[in-house]
Length: 143
Length: 70
Image 1 (cartoon, rainbow over the protein chains, first blue to last red):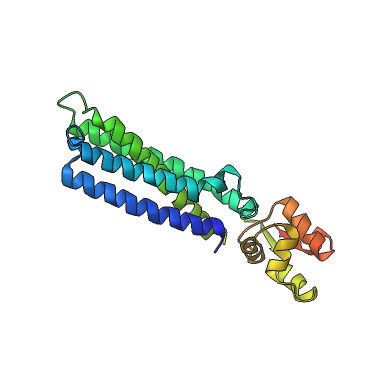
Image 2 (cartoon, chains in turn cyan, brown):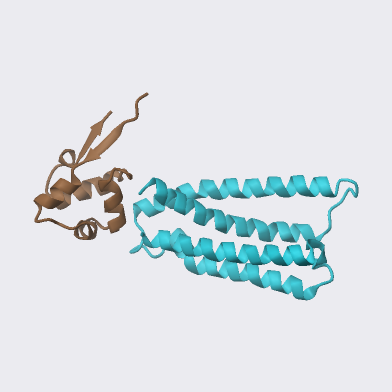
């Protein structure tokens, strides 16, 4: 297994575990409890920031061009193709957020202020997850 | 339009060169062993630069390593 492929699996594993933990917290407490539950807000912020830091350590060096000894032209081609998966992942997420929030809060004519915050974190998470998935798809296609 | 394919003789050439390993070839051309495996299997078409380097590692012309079949 190529070094970048190993890192993509690790990134995907961390991303899935963190996302699942955040979803569980949001389902149990309710997304709008962000207003009055500081502990929950810090917990989710900590999880997302932890995931961002893990991503920076695991995958960012390869994407920024550092670690040249480990990555060659095929790895770079795979990273470029993975950006397409990232793009569609983020677009898909924005479509879901837009439709869901519009349908749920149509009558009120406005959405709770907490949602831009949740949208931002979720975009960051999907961006990282879809990058790992895109890299793994690339290795499947390019041997 | 039929899909063009690029075949290669890397495996044959490795064995003709004292059974050179994939790792040795990778070290000579500056890529990972996984990339040599993918090129050998026809799953990845290398850049011109890498193709020339592979040919140079075997001391042959590029046409003797890679064949285009349109």
